[in-house]
Length: 194
Image 1 (tube, helix red, strand yellow):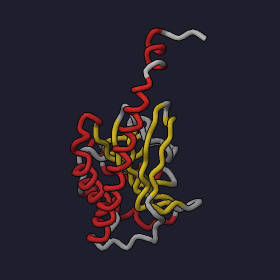
Image 2: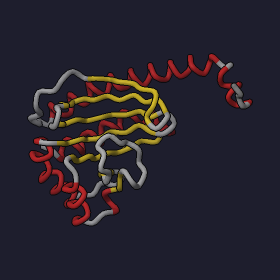
Image 3: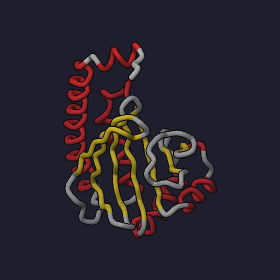
């Protein structure tokens, strides 16, 4: 086995993994606070969401090679029918919030989402252009900014797949704004499906 000097420096530095564990614990605690905030917002808006499961915080080590944490709440994941708000922390990249509608939920809410986006194209809101519903990076092959699109293109994107995904991201450098950012965007997305 050959290690570069950089690799050797990392493999001999146990402090890095301890700091990583502390960061993951802090993000988890933030996500636990977000789930309470989300619940208060959608209950306050009077949105008749279907019965959702318990909040679920998951973590992994390999989304495009990097660790991540996700909070799925409120969320209903069926075999074909999905209504989910996914909050994500992707190591080295961003925090994000994504509304995922699929199956009967896409049918139920698509007109309201389309009408909302035609009337108002919030800067910083992205719409999926990918064939896969399970990609979360912000490359041009996955998401396009809504405010850069005309209404016809928005309609095409909302109709082209079996799912709709709307998303907003917060740069890691702005982590101190996480609660306010998620409050704002969760509220925007909830209003679209009222």
